[in-house]
Length: 171
Image (cartoon, rainbow, N blue to C red):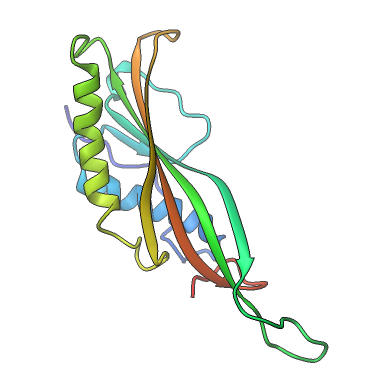
């Protein structure tokens, strides 16, 4: 089947969007370019898969924590800003049809996971992050929709820095 490019997204950093969005957009761009087997690579909380669009990959962000890394901070009349260390949970959700490989769905999900891991373990997402690590993997099968689908969620810890009050720029 022909590869369908990812939905048009703003170039990371071009619209002065929150770093979370820039990270999602950059992950979609890099995964889509590196793994042509996925018929759809998207970033949406309302992903709706269809058999003709599988295998597919959805990229979302979940929990994020931040902590000041420098002492001090905004002082009356001062332009000094604290460095903020941020840790973001990025999830890559692999969707594949159980109908295509009913006896080997786990092997198929693992095979696709290998491709995703190869990309994300070898990137800093256009230097938006300084560290990315796989922290969790959860395979499951959803048999309640119109077609049974294998879903493999890989959760990544993405570490990056911003300056306090400037969540649109990675430093």
